[in-house]
Length: 279
Image (cartoon, rainbow, N blue to C red; front, side):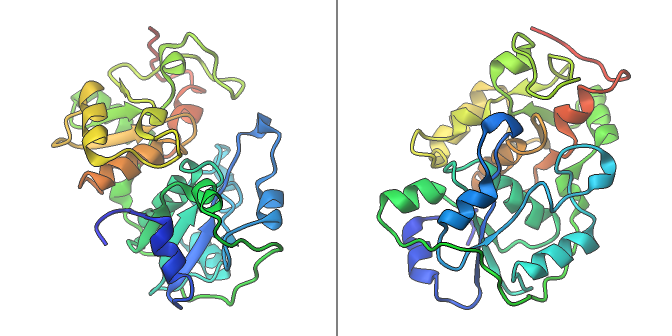
């Protein structure tokens, strides 16, 4: 499938297929007052396992949910029942937000058969589709990581892209945070944005129903933000979550090669040797 999204209708018809592996990647901001694991236990799509974005990460970096080392990710994926021939379908309780991050994680580890459930759990529930309770313990898979470094951008690569213009850096944060008029939700981060970055708030790509906008609307949104879809693109945000929503939208538009700046503003905004612009 060329589209990185699948519909609820498609998934409902495929749930019993042995190669389908459904993962709930719901994640909430620390101040949201919600427990993603508890909500998963209360109800989830039948057969789903829980992909913990914070746990399946590189804790040594001191930054939120950084991409895991390939060997560590492979172990986690196997425990979730993912095999080399699995079609991974990721969803979340938002409709479309953190699922994109897990989708990107799998793609960055070389697993191209990864998709996001468009509209996520809210759409599934609204359609009266079945759910189950408890905690799934799937049989281990045989997943093997084959990292694709082109999909992961680091601090140095972003610096070089901004200095040379060789790639467009597109920030998915809300306009008020990009401009520096609203404070960052994480303490210790300077307000503002990377000089030369473009701003395309991820919410402008998502319908009120929680589904990703149609391709024509996506193209129009990128164009309005000054993004040239024919040139290299690096996406960024607060901590690498909503940057993946931009990457998902770009994949839908035939640009699955966009990189995500993994450290994002959690790294850039915390340093004293990185330039920051406001306004």
